[in-house]
Length: 343
Image 1 (cartoon, rainbow, N blue to C red):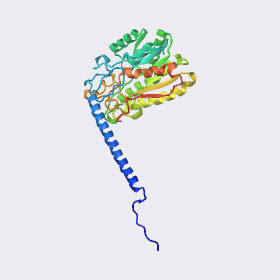
Image 2 (cartoon, rainbow, N blue to C red):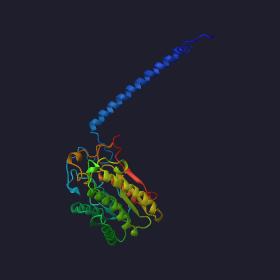
Image 3 (cartoon, one colour):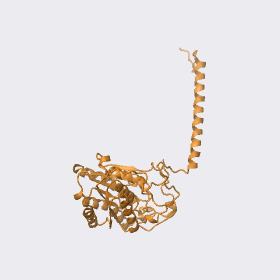
Image 4 (cartoon, one colour):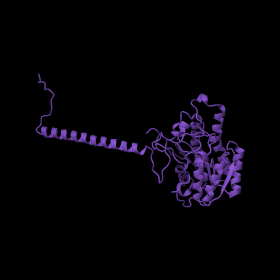
């Protein structure tokens, strides 16, 4: 019968040296841990001193808490506090859209206004479709003209397909052609529950946000040639959803699918179709939707801990409109989210 051998520690001749090396490594690991935890604590304290919001641009942008405020729809940018930043003073034009003509819906304020300004800086004449915000539209016209380009103001509602045809025809009459369509007009209204969304609200949201895009694209298409572009404004809500923007999120998801489908439909004609999907952006859309206390914290849930300013989103529209930058890009959803929510 074989003798049982009890388990024990290795007792080779190098035992003491190996054990000492193990203890040294363990102590070294603990020292690395202490140093890392100390650095983390210092970093957290430094972040707290900075106030949390990330400033990665050439100039500082407003940070929450923003002044509580609420506006009746459709919202007036001239009455927002602080005023949205749209002039992008550090952006230098280089003729990327020289001689082109663009039509921008919702171009009187917010992202649309910032896009109009940069398109003009890149050499394009701009037609601006807006609902009824005359003061905002005039300010946008002045900003476009200050860049040395022409602006055409076209008031009306993209819900109406006849108006969409008239807007395109007016643009072509004024400027002689159409090269770039930017679908940007939007309707948004928060609701606590699906039960709180009326048939009228559901109808208005879909007719503005997706029917309007469809109507404008169909009206513009006879005038677009090889090298032209259609750009749609999507949203993070169309990617991730939003518990209090059920109807709006659904339309933004539809815009993303419409973008990809229309791109496939038009690619052989040399017409590119793309979409920019922003996260929170400081525009009249939100103060004309949410209560003042919610507006004060707008944009805090993304990793940059602040909303984007329109001038931070507009260069993406230049990139996707300019053949010199994106002639091989179509059917894409370019998300600009300020870091993912929650982190």
